[in-house]
Amino acid sequence: MPEVKAETVATSPEAVSEHLAASRYLADDSLATAIFLAIRLGKPLLLEGAPGVGKTEAAKAIAELLGRDLVRLQCYEGIDAAHALYEWNYQRQLLAIRHAGEHEIDIYDDRFLIARPLLQVLKAPEQRVLLVDEIDRSDHEFEALLLEFLSDFQISIPERGTIRAAAQPIVILTSNRTRELAEALRRRCVYHWIGYPDAEREAAIIMLRAGDVAEATARAVAGAVQTIRARPLAKTPGIAEAVEWANAATILEKGGSPWPEAFRRSIGVLIKDEEDLSYIAPELGSIVEEALG
Image (cartoon, rainbow, N blue to C red):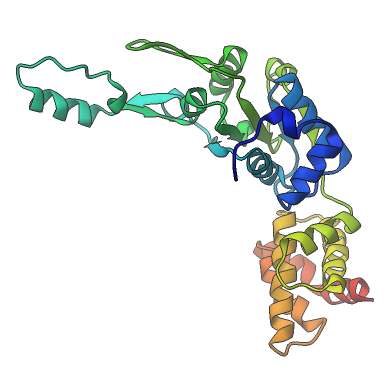
């Protein structure tokens, strides 16, 4: 897909919603508005919500509609600057010094620099979208580093000087809210909370993203998943699991397993925790039958 200017896509929240739908991502008006404002204001977009509601998929869809590569920085406990910014390839530097002998060599040349996600985006901001995924998994020190990066969109490399973005990068941050983020980081972003969709929207998502799934099946899955999510489960199923359940049940049904047995037999693609399976098993039959009815 060819690169397009962000401004040509973000002419209105409605236009953003239409472009995302073309990328097989259904965004409601509030999410489309948040994306529109983040692009037009040149601010990072912070998406919070429970795991599985489509935060990362939203970032992928935004990159796709802009025709840009998605550069993903997956956060985790203990992540540091070397994993996010850059590091030097010491082995290549040593080999180059040996081969150079008595000749001078610049060991801080580009060929020895390993660009990590933040630097990758700075070097080509109009070709890439930065996704900082699950920022809440990192510690406060890394959050401060990221805040500094978002303030100036530049990186200082002692051996090379300062590298600045030639244009405003598009940055998306996601959080599962396992911990509170710093207020300074929140203030810098356009914020949006993504919740689980209602049954009608989830059925539409299943129809859009699943394979050969009938509308009645999509609606039954959406209804059953809504009921299951209301239960006190350890791992609440996300939208992706609902899509998988619809696909799996359809495959079983076409192989000769009748409804609602196909739903019960494929429950392992929706619920992926032993205790949750044991908890929901006594109710599963009635939940499925009610959704089919």
